[in-house]
Length: 576
Image (cartoon, rainbow, N blue to C red; front, side, top):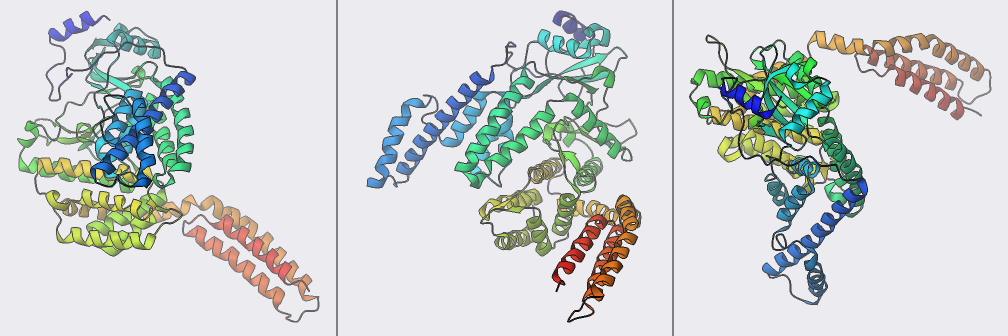
C-alpha cells in the first residue's frame, strides 16, 4: 500500500473525525540506518561521558566562582583542571550548567539514553532536584522512520502484505517515542485500530546500549555509591528491554482487561492478535478526550465527579489490590471515553508498554501506608513507608520516620492541591529518603507518578477536589477485601502443598525424636530430663510449623527443617 493510496483513502472520508487528533505535524523523519557496532557505540558513549565529566568540572568551577568561593590556593588546581578541560567540551554546552549538559548529551546519544533520562527524571529520591527537573525537558516527540520502512516492518513481522490486512493506514504517525511509533489504521473488517511498531534497528541498539550501561553502572557504583547508579541502570535495562517486546504489551493489555472485567466504566484497548507480532501491536483505537481538553471541562459536574471517582478506584485497585499497574501514566495516557448516548463517559487507559509489578509483601506495605495516610494516621504512615525502603550502610530509619511523620502531620493541617497535595506529600516523603540514605525500589517511584498524574487530572476536571476523601472509600474496600474470610482461606490453600509435606514428615520426625530420647536416657547424665527436653522442643517446632501452614504463611518446610536442626544441635550439646 503506497502513501498516496492511504492519503487518498483518508480524503474520501476514512476515519478522521475523532476527539483526539489523528496526527500532529512536526515529526522529524530520519532514514533507517544500520545500528552501530558495539565498539563504535562504546567509543561514542565514552566520548560523551568524557565530555560530560569535563563540562561538569567547568560548570562546577564557574558556579563556585559566581558564589565567591573560588578563591585561595586550594582552589587553584581545580581552576587549572577546568581550564585544561574546557577545549574538550562542545561549544554549545560549555557555558551551560551541568543538568542542561546532561540532558543534551542524553539526547545526542539517541533513543536508549533519552529513555534512561526519562526514568532518571522520576528518581527524585536519589538525584538532586535540579537534575530531575531538567531531565523532564527531554524530547518527547522523537524522530520517526519513513512510512515505507514502517510498512515494511509490519509486513515482515506479520508475514503478509499490508493490503491483505488493512483497508487504510495513515502515513502520518500519531505518536513517536524512543522505541516505537504509532499510526492509525482500519482493518479489513472495518475496525479502527492503532498500529504500534518497534522502529527498525532499535532493538539491536538497545541490547548493545544495555551491555555498555551495565558496565558503566558498575564503574559509577564505585565512584558515587550514594546515588545507587548500578541499581538505577539495572532497573532501567529490565524495564526497557521488556518495553521493546510488543507481545508483552499485548499480554499487559489483556491482563488489565481481565483484572477489570467487572468494571464496565474502566476500559482498555482490545488486542488484535491476528495482526500483532513481536515488532507490531495492533490494538483497538479508543476515541477519547484528554483531561485537559476543553470538551472535558464542558462535561456536567455529575459526569466529572463520576470520572474522578472511577479513576481513583481504578488506580487504587491496580496498585493495592492487583499489584499490577500502569507505570508510564501521564495525561496523554489517561483519557475520557464517551459512552453511548444514554451512558456516562468512561475512564480509559492507553499505552501500557511499561507496567509496574508489586510483590505481595511490598503491595501490602504500600496498602497499609496509603490507608494510614488517607485516614490521617501519620505515625503508622511513616512506619510503613520506612518498611518499604532499604537502608544504606549509613542509613537512618529512625530519623526518616520522624521526618515523614512531621510532613504527614503538616499535610493533614493544610491539604490542598495548590499548596500541598497528597501526591506532593508522597513525592516529598520519598525524596527525603535520600537525605537519610533510605533507598526505594523503582516500583515505589512509579507508584508516586501514577498518583500524581491522577491527582493532576482530577484537579483539571474538578478544581479543589479532596483526593483523600475520594480515596477513602476505595482504599477501605481493598483493605477489607484483603482480610476477607474467603481471601484468608485462599491464602491458606496456597500453602497446602507445604502443609501436606510437613504432615507426611511429622511421623518420621517424632519417631526419630523418640529413638534419640531412648538412646540419651540410657546414658549417665547430670540432668536425666535433657533428652526429653530436646524431643519436646523438636515436636513443638513441627507443630508450630503446621499451625503456620494452616494460617497461610507457607512456613511448614522451614519449621520442619528448623526442628531437625534444633534436634541435632541439642544432641550435640548434650553429649557428655
